[in-house]
Length: 356
Image 1 (cartoon, rainbow, N blue to C red):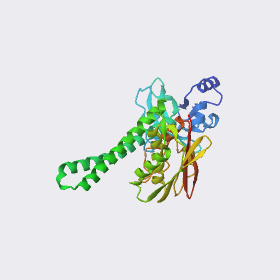
Image 2: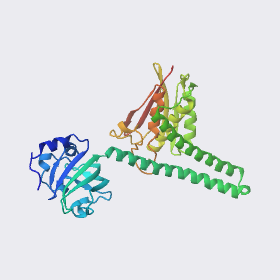
Image 3: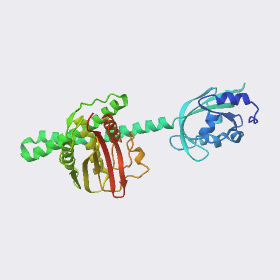
Image 4: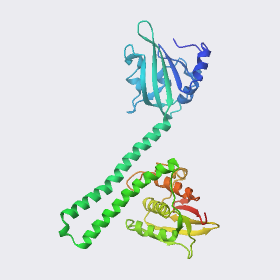
């Protein structure tokens, strides 16, 4: 029989001190009690849950989305003489309809004949861990895809040149070798991104500061990206005598490449403007595209690691670029943000101190 309300208040108090959710199920399949962590997880208050069928309160589904109680009722399918179940991961459907990933294990209390008379299920909210794992899986899949594409190109062109060297003219050879170099650079940038993430996470990002001309770097970036941006025109707008800054030239170039490539990837065909102005003791560089802009709900997250605001071929990416950009800019004592976004386009702005 289900425990009457208040029958064992000391037991409830002890359960409430535990860090995991605890759900106690009686021999009749009804809820005996649950602690406060389980209340928060399930959305059911202890007094309301007592006596209800456990499948109504602890609604869990497996990875295929099937209600566990429909095929694995522990009172029917528990292995004979087993004292409990191993920890498994399930999706918990809360009382309000929301979902959480939980890790659940059960301990069985049996009578003298081996029949289950009580189950104590412990649950832990692993939604954050599950999200991190899912992000890691998606990252691995994205990396595999992003590496396979240029690697296939490099391998294909290399094999073709080696087999047919004498049949190609100088212009054809130059075109294929240029493509190989470009794709090799793509793979190198991807691996560099991963290394930079590791360095940012461990606080070991190294900066090799020297006096640099950001306007000149922007011109180089625009020329490079324009090679693959057939439907975009990249314009530069820097005043004469634009101040030089002490910064790592490779890292600043990496930031600008990422911002301009993002503008190509997410913006509509048209003009991308890279401009610079002086603001007190800082320089400000803006990258502006034309297009749909970023949904305001996404803006707080665009600099988060692994965050991708869209799906599909056009918007593919690892979700690391802007996260790395922020780390690089802030390591220089600067700031990067989405300054403006609307139906006519988006502007990213970064600042760097003129004197460090």
